[in-house]
Image (cartoon, rainbow, N blue to C red; front, side):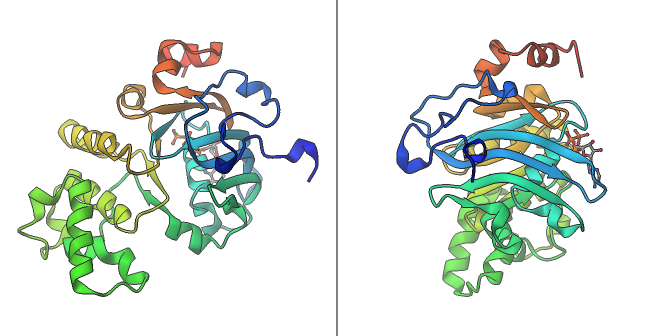
Length: 288
Ligand SMILES: Nc1ncnc2c1ncn2[C@@H]1O[C@H](COP(=O)(O)OP(=O)(O)OP(=O)(O)O)[C@@H](O)[C@H]1O
């Protein structure tokens, strides 16, 4: 590995882990993190191409801060979903895709691009735009991932079901009908069930791809409330089209444009004092 290929962030055990190892690329001149923030994953010089040759991610480097919510924002087609899906190797379900660079899971410092995608998907959970519960009971939905991992002890499953549904702010609403079909729930409840299902296996990172875009305002508020509560417990990366939502629910925000990372910072700092003109143009509505 040449010096230019060196990952740009130090590892968790080295302390001061969010400082770049080398000068960041021109698009990253304006990011800052307090050195005390622990990192759960470190993206270094990530590039991604679809099977038809389209390059959707172009040299993105950024940390993912442990047990905090990081939002990806930017205009349509800028690569938010593509970037998110690199974290659970979702693209590998299609032929001809290509990655370069690294997404290192910390503290192990394992590049997930080199791991078996099935293992990655067991470690990194995902919730999609449209709620997609299995046509099974609420209980069976929550334990689906646990069964795959060979956990069958009923008392343990019961405990995890209650814990996951509580974390997903759903327990009180469904505790008396755990064995009814998940399809009998409202859209918002179904989405919180999908979050509970993802949480049940204690993912290292939870990916949320516009999780409220199919929900009404009341269901959206409940899911946002839930995401706020997850901070401190789970490392969340979320794509949102809605800047107000990013401001409400995230601790860190990354602004992307044309596959590049333009600016990354604490959410409050990015929205109140963007350092890049392009970011300012976007968040003030002059562009995008
Ligand atoms: N399956 C695919 N094959 C080829 N190109 C793709 C594919 N999916 C997305 N792209 C292209 O990759 C780029 C990034 O798309 P992506 O969906 O990641 O953007 P996005 O920021 O999430 O957009 P949106 O906000 O509209 O969902 C776009 O140019 C898009 O056309």
